[in-house]
Length: 381
Length: 140
Ligand SMILES: [Zn+2]
Image (tube, chains in turn purple, brown):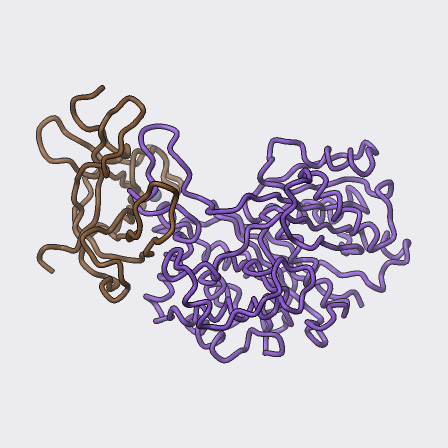
């Protein structure tokens, strides 16, 4: 099978765009990604479009109505918070399989403000606040408290994740926020669901990101190898059975399964990775994923954040983009935005937040339900 | 409109005579238990091996969150809890009669399942509902 390369990739600055349509927001990133490699929509053989909020709304086709209706095949993808990464992976798979040699993947989302999850009842009575909470801050708080019961992880350690990611975002002009949040401010912010305060919850924003993927032959033919990023591994997993997963969505075993397979596919291990963009939908979640992705041994995640190993300049910087906590989390766009971030570092184009000498990067997203996507990327040699 | 309360969830059973109880389904092949009726085991994939079991009314607190922000009209704070019942079945619900403070909520705290009105919530037909809650075990 051919190798597949990212030749163009970009994202819009995340924000709130109530006056735009979902296809319009997605089209902006698509054009940016095309411009990044100097190709046009006519050069694309297929579009894989990820969006959650209008999953039945033919967003990909409407996006082409904005920027060029070539008649190419369009696949619309929805897969919870792994939506964008799944669209990217479908695009990658089509190139790997030799079906196409130049395709476009787009992720886009337009979000409202407020709590996600724990919706109203279709029959009977509402269950929120009666049978516990289905809101996302509470669900991820419960997952964090599982780590606390095992390893004694503290509220302060969870909060430090937000301090770090908000700090990182001050170096990222495409993040929603660029604001320092010292530890007392994070811990004293409005408590949403203990131990997650408001500053430990990801930001609901609108956004889009896109990538152009080519076969090796095509990338060379187009003279695009100098900035190309090789996809060393692309893995998607659903949640393997766990004893509590029907009452406590399990983000751990799904991520561990995907990580193991991704490292095997890439032929490397966590020690070879120079930076990670992982799914910090809540500060509690990031702590879990240090261990799930093998960045440290089980039980060491608290130490990792305490000792600064995961901050810019540390042993293995995590979420130097600012992460979902501060860059923002437009559900369907997040997976490709992570890929943009890592690619930008591998290209040495990340400016003041550049992870020096980055050769290998890993992206991770997980959507409850569950779907976990991991990509391992490497600067083309 | 029913003159008796309806169950808040299908796995809460209210016998004509006798106490309400929670019902699980147990796999005869691998032993996994699940809340509510099913015919195929999602752990091992066995078909037609599931049988109804009455779940125990006691267990231990596995994990929790103290919810301070919820949807409009929902009283906060409250404790959202994951409980492992004594037979190993995991179940989620409100932990009541406890201070909403981490210092008062130790992991593995013994809890009991109690049945009570569903916080006054009624459906569009005006039916009342019976729900289940966890509280610190009386013997603890
Ligand atoms: Zn079974």
